[in-house]
Length: 80
Image 1 (cartoon, rainbow, N blue to C red):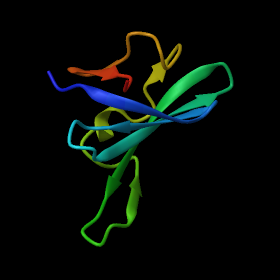
Image 2 (image 1 turned 120 degrees about the vertical axis):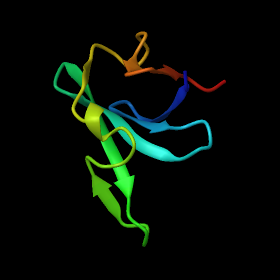
Image 3 (image 1 turned 45 degrees about the horizontal axis):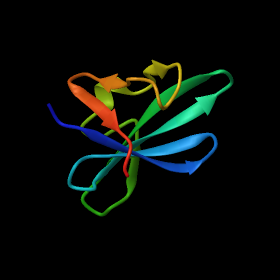
Image 4 (image 1 turned 60 degrees about the vertical axis):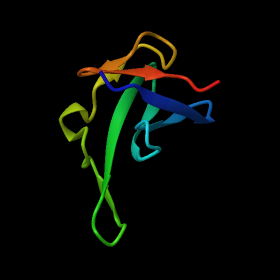
């Protein structure tokens, strides 16, 4: 199981990272729910919205960023 790390950007956004620090998406508050927004990058470093290794979990809904969140087999962990 690979832990993902949430880093708070602001009250409505947390960036989501793999253990190696790679950015794979954001968790965004949309109204009263939180949505995981997958992000990938092409060879030139351009952003591919909805892409990347967690593309199949794009738009997954969550109650809160501090609840026991999981994207497939990868639970979220908050740093420090």
